[in-house]
Image (spheres, one colour):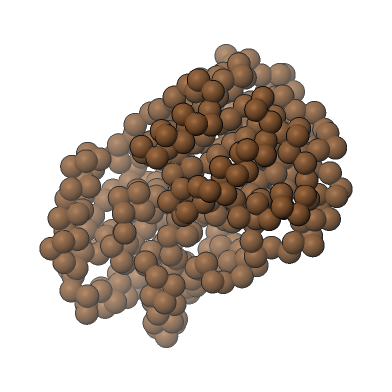
Length: 371
């Protein structure tokens, strides 16, 4: 849909055009008018579809600078808090609104200073937002919009009690927007409790061919995995590659092995400081390193449009993890490939089941065939 066909202020349209929003995505077309009309929303949409802008754009239409926060956005990870905060700042640059990302690992003193100076939009993880509310860092009486981004992941991470406590601190007159990659029974039950007659929006189901993600699996023994990985990386040394492992220890083990082969790699996981994680992500984004190894904590926080390959070195622990991992490539219309190492009959069965459930075409890759 062209921007001219949607009811936004001329100033907003001008700003969107200036920063490259010439055409709205499917989820943006569906969500923006409903948010503008005051509806509560349940939105199902995968990452890389413009979901963040779908809720930020209409919310901004209803804001003017205020001494107290008017928007509270809850997200599952600090990486996503930073990403949503930066996108919000970009979209609101013509409004002089103040946005802050709050998350554990960042300086509490710095965050408190920002609250004292006045904020309009708070983007945060449930744990750190709870900390601030208990400290009375900010008032929630003026919250007009409560947004739960990637609600399924927040619930999976065990944040349900914190989220419920936070919601009860906000006005009943608020407009609530919930976004989730999957609409599970838990999400449905949650929405019935806290949303008012919500409209359910399903983002256009895009298959992997439409997303330009080609999926493969490589059968290998556990002992041969590292050898196959090293060989693959040597043949694709100019490509941007993201490798997923299931544990922090395995991430470091792979990183140290590849460094010993003089490869330009680094890794991130949740035990690293936020400053270090940010530095590593920037190195990857700026192509100072060609390979990044990560745990699933990074799956929702890495937003780099030109990743060539995602490699599931360890088999994903759930179908949702698989979906979010491979979604790091093939973004913004670019092509990408995902390769999953399969080391047991159980893993092969799980991958086959997933391919049938999601209508994915996952082709077998020979150990002697490198793309």
